Image 1: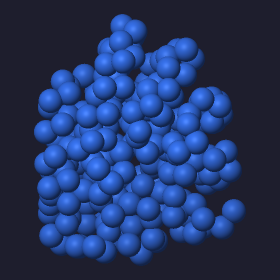
Image 2: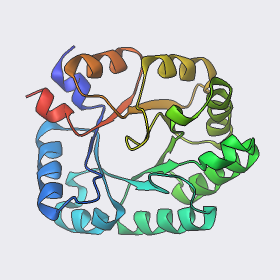
Image 3: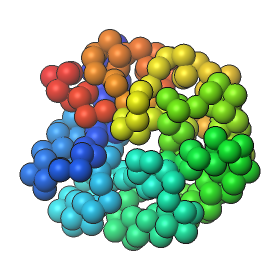
Length: 214
């Protein structure tokens, strides 16, 4: 698989709590040079990136990250501010506690709320597969589909496990035809990148792809 095919699916990511502006500049410059799909960055850097780079770069950010248990009103406020600052894509974390309590309708309503705020912008829904049973993963495929989100995403990269090919195959069986898949977490080799693209992932969230494919 050629390098460009992989990189155009990569959300080039820097979400560490200690990320400096120098780290973010390096990330953005690499993303532009390698034509990645986006940069995925902390909300605090969105406006500064937008002011520095304008339309040269597609900015993705995270909401309710990484634990997901913020109330919907807080996630909605985060989403509105991120869009106002210049983000074009939002990766939200579901309320995993709601899933564990069987409150699937509440999860779907929250996704609907954020998708309405996003409008035509991309909404990716992180379900954090490492904490869910197969039944819960299938229920989340339905919630993401019925709520009209653009992507289902495996992981934050901050949980106890990351993306697996088994989960991607499960998603493919249960998501709607308009929902795409993003794999993230633990993707650390060229072989990993190729395998997830071949399995049908439209996006891959990783900090390592650019370095691996040099």
